Structures are given as structure tokens and as C-alpha cells.
Length: 228
Image (cartoon, rainbow, N blue to C red):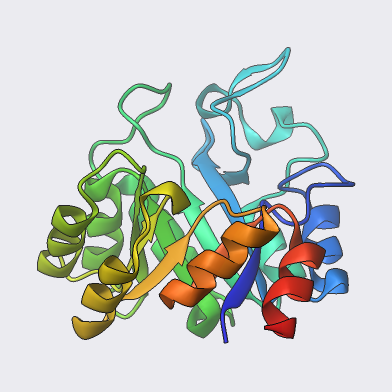
């Protein structure tokens, strides 16, 4: 059965990446959520997608006290998702403010997850390979997935993920193929694809054998994939 994760919660009717969005995903029947994490100026882990918060500036330059009330910290988000799968995407790119090249944010995320009760239901992902390498170095038991955009050579990316000891490949759905999924499964890796909202495309990626779909349309995905 394909696992269905709400993209940033269930953001179609509430603000994304908020406790309300995660509660909404649970209410809709999602298996879990995908959420985004950034490090604040004082070293906390804020759940927010964009590098900047409108009218306030980069998350990396704000303290916890300066965050809007709707931006939760990771520990609160994980508590809200207790019993669900939580895909934590670390936002850490060289082109964005506050880029962490030394692995501090990765280690902080890994340590927080291991201190919680939820470690068995967490996967940590990132577009920046060095960041998930740092997660794996900090806590080898944590499942990690490399996020890739469709223009990548996905088979080469899979080979890299295998070489680096990661648990999964997370390709953009336009780069998916049944051959890629079969190759990943043959090597013992899961495949989670994003962000799949169209009913026909949900059926197509499910037929390819993916393990997880990340979607903005949880109710649609449940109707399509559970019915299938």
C-alpha cells in the first residue's frame, strides 16, 4: 500500500507548515506529513518552507522570540504528529541565507528526533546531499532520503544515494519511472515522490511501485489510491 503524506500538512484550507495543517492531515486520514525545517539565529528549528518570512526577513536571522506565532518549532510539530509518519525536509541550500556547510543543522535535527518518542516514524530528507550525509553521520539509525528534481539523472542519483548509505530516493514525480523504482527496491531503498496532486498521475506513480506519495490533495490521494 502506498503511504500518503500531506505536503506541508494539509495546506489546501489552512496555512501550510502549521500545527493546524498537521492536525488537518490527521483528520483527513493521511499516513503522515512532510514538513520543512530551518535553523533560526539562536539555533532553534523552525518549521517554515521559505527562506524568508514576509515583512520580517530570513528565518536564519530571526530568533525564536521574533517568529510569528503561526510558525511552530520542530518538537511541537512532531508532538502534533505523534503516531504519524513525519518526513522532515531540512531546508539548507548554498544559495539561501544562513546556509550551514558544517552539518550543525543536520546534527541538531538528528539529536532532537532521537530525544523524542517518534524516531521510528521519521525520515529526514534534503536537496543538499552533504546535509543528509551529516544526518547519517550523526545518527546512523535514522532513515534518510535524498531529494532530487526531475532534471537530474535519477539512476545516477540513486547510485549516489546507495553509495552514501541513504535509505531512500525522493525524486520529483516528473522524473519517475518504473525502472527507477525497481532498481531502488533491488538495492533496498524506498522511493518517495513529490508533489503528486493529479488523480491520473497518482495512479501512474502507484503503478510504478512507489512507496510514498507526497501530495497537497490528501483526500483525493486517499480516494484514488485506497480504492485502487
